[in-house]
Length: 509
Image (cartoon, rainbow, N blue to C red; front, side, top):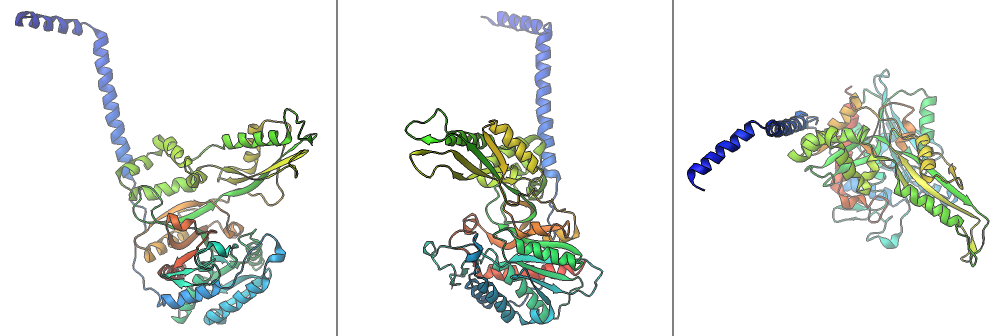
């Protein structure tokens, strides 16, 4: 093709395109789509960066003159008293709890001289530090005296020896929750020695059986009600300062629990004729039951990203790098993706849905006998916003078999606790206390997965928060109720300073 012919072809093609309205519309559509993509990208970036840091200023404080080693030795001595909670009440060593009471009196004489102490429900303790302004509602710091059992042969350090080695105090209760009991009293003893007198009354509440049903905490709440106590806020254990656990977040995060999940056991029961295993029917009680359980596992309750968990992302996202910040700042678009990602990991799946865990099965007691009755227990942990009625309706819909009887198991099923506010002065003081003692830490609200004593104090105030002020890694999380529970000597001293700062700040309100 010569130049003249090629030029003529270009002219003809241009003329055809000029007369082709479809081609013109197609080009305009592409330009419009590109414009929309650019606008969307700009909107995502702007929205992702629009929320500034929500962190309180990391103010400097005067730390208590805590001798970390001596404080650690007192904690270790308390660990040596095995205040273990057992399901069988006859196995509980009540004398051990009384020895712990006596040890606290010995270690903290000023507390026991100046504060009022009440023994509640035989073994729980309630301390009251009267404030100078009786018109102010009281602050309340709580922990628990009991611990879970420990199998000594599994541990590298004996669980009840209270050894101090390698910069750690080792033993059951060092993290859950004698660190809270002694940390609070250690802080109060130092404040009393310094002449501190609170403006606001402060209660210390130490339940005896948090690891069971929390009857001690329930009795403490009832006692305070009887006495007409007005409570501004409660701070219990629950969440912690987690390091290297939240993807995309560099610094540790102090997660303050605003609520905790509900609890219910659902029993599935199937009854058939039974018989000998050599001539089984087409469907057995066990087969019908396990099929129902399998359907419940395959069809969990839906995920939701709201409440405390959504609030957590709102607080941590400004402290993240660009991409996760954009994603979390635009949950209106990326919410399904985030929910799917969280649902894929057991630990985070529990934060976005009501979970179901089959935990108990019973049927025949002999290998060659068909069970006439087979039953299973499914443990549900309810997300705030899901009710016991929602769980019941979901189970019935998914099981969808009239041969399966569905009941809530005996006990005390309960809905999730109310969600405490993040705009209260008490939450602000807790967050500011964290930043004062741990200035490198990011503070964020969160949801507590397991049950704590805090659920019993919701009748006293709307402001119920949950934070154990110790820094933990992913490895450390396995130590809770696991083997080789321990706390750093320095970390315990930091916890004492945190509790002291809470007491001081609560008196400034």
